[in-house]
Length: 533
Ligand SMILES: Nc1ncnc2c1ncn2[C@@H]1O[C@H](COP(=O)(O)OP(=O)(O)OP(=O)(O)O)[C@@H](O)[C@H]1O
Ligand SMILES: [Mg+2]
Image (cartoon, rainbow, N blue to C red):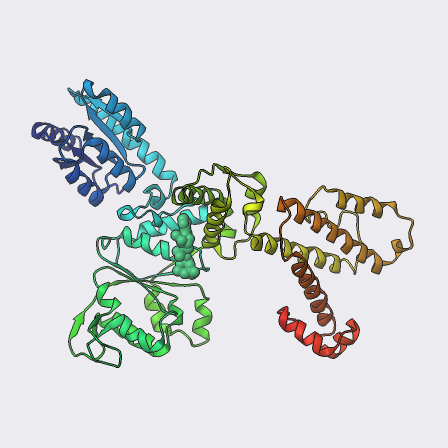
């Protein structure tokens, strides 16, 4: 809360005298009252001013106090709402408390009582907002659009929220960077929804999805007949977003020629539609996003430096999900709740194994990937708990595949040093028969392989494979068809070939000779398995 501003309080009551009494009392006690005559007016004023504390009467014409309370909570979950009631409305009061009212005031009023309650509500609000990021604490729901709700309270996201809080009010250009699916667009929408332009349009344009030939007409519009196919006049995105926000997704994909034109519009704040003469004033706030390395795009000459600086007055980086794993739990809960409603399901929890997996997986597709995984799990799950078997096979396989690779590489590195007991201990801890049997055999000792590092390594691979098979079986729940064979063989082939290639410094003739495979076969495998060396 800004200390120079007086704390705002919304007072909604249909009785003139009560409003006046509140006005007097609050003004003399250094608050700024916002007065509303009924629920509808109150909601409008609430959306406009977002006061942390509200005092609302239950009985009002149009929208009553309870409905108003629900609407207020939708807009700002942590608003402290005090409901005013007469004794006869006790039931309503209880209901109001269930809907999240902070407290209630009984008529007739006692001024000291009112002031004390308001003060208490304000300190409680300050307490919770000092620990909760501004954006999240407002429970972002711009105009009821729950899809814009931002979940996640990790320190890294709190930094993002703080930045949003600082810049939303201004009109400066913002550049949002972050991996695909990390939430760039949702953040852009939240900046818009928290800005003075919130009531105006948010227009998004994906610069990579529009052919170079059409981007000019998309952005600036065109006059009828200005080119083949221009059958009617079209208003461009710049004009549509004029007093709102223009969101340029994948901005670095814009061609150089277009970048020049774009920059000119940003400087002159006016456009001319393609094929037209009229000069149209435009002044959208620009928010751009990209998932590529902009410094590299600059040095590769793919992005104009002057445009880059113009767009990047403020930059916000959204960290990938794997760098804020503490957000995973609340995101999973939120997506389960969302898809429970959407798919009419009653999922209550995820099993501890699944949670552990979700927590450890690297999420290359970030929140979008997590959201899709939860959606499909909720759709498949027939009971009330999400189990391993409800997860998409591909992500489990990807995860396991990586583990095979790590384990086998570890075995490879150990070729230089003698194998130690428990060397692969960090790999998939499964206490299954297959794994322990293998372990016992190894411990048995006394065989010729003991002093031969080659066969020791092979037996290690055997052990790892046995453990991998057990692991796969344990996570599958019931036997189903998978591509397990192909995945494992591919991984092993990849590791083997790339290691030999590395040893022979990329020489394919020597590599194929050493491996005993035909050179063409080697080349095909390098290509198919995407081997780089
Ligand atoms: N913090 C979050 N809380 C809730 N949902 C989120 C959050 N971040 C992202 N999402 C959801 O994840 C999906 C992907 O987010 P978004 O489209 O904003 O990502 P992006 O960074 O723009 O991705 P891309 O680079 O692929 O365009 C959306 O459905 C969005 O609603
Ligand atoms: Mg996007």
